[in-house]
Length: 192
Image 1 (spheres, helix red, strand yellow):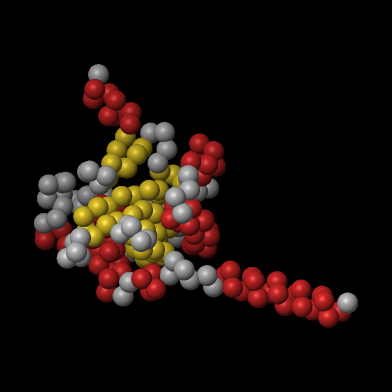
Image 2 (cartoon, helix red, strand yellow):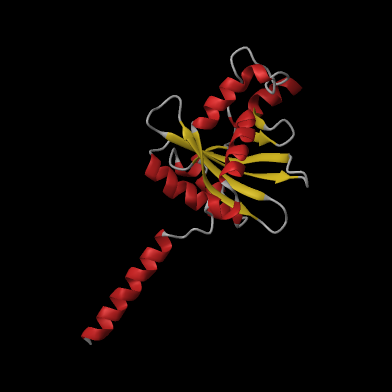
């Protein structure tokens, strides 16, 4: 009987260790260090606020490289997955500007053409500002659900408060064409 308990304990311990080291979404498994940096650098054009005196029309100008370089330095690729249908999923963590030492997560997907140029960029969710280990745990859960195509609605702030997803919510949504978050209420006022 003692032997059964020892084997059961060993099996549970191995299961816990294996789960903690689950690397199926490890960025290094899919991208070189250089490719990871390139993804982050290209995505900050869309995930970061416009630079001082910048606009949507001028944000790609080299005069703002310093601004986007700084934003990229504050961003880390936490999870990545290449699907068989050509869609790549990402989860990045970045320093929260308003509340330190908090971080926020951005989960989304990108597509590249044959030459390696980003042709699509979409943010699926942005987390609330969280401490690092909480962002890692909750971000991993959201990332896995996103990759699997599961509905994330139950993680919206309407149902979970400020625990998981800050955006989208009933007001803000991500527009794939303009590649940034838009406000439903302001958009509806423009139509009236």
